Length: 80
Image (cartoon, rainbow, N blue to C red; front, side, top):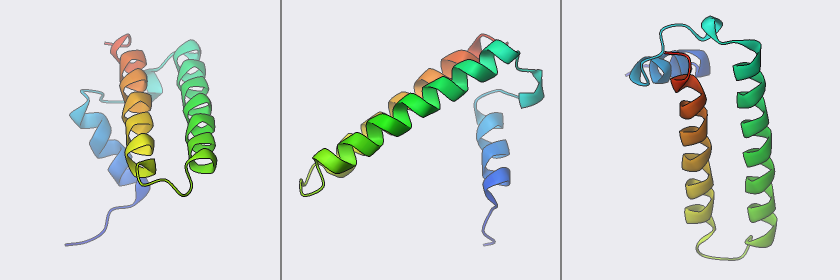
């Protein structure tokens, strides 16, 4: 089994989300996605600092990552 590049993995994920082409996003949607990513990257970094010795850190990080993806999917959903 060959490893996929990040680009190939992203394209595959887009297809599972029902998105054919990310180029069809409006500038507003692109800005929203960037803001969501920035916000959740900051939240994840904060959790990593605050919970560095905690057992539940991976679960907290996974929750934030799922939440980030859900919000991004909502932005994409407005493009259909």
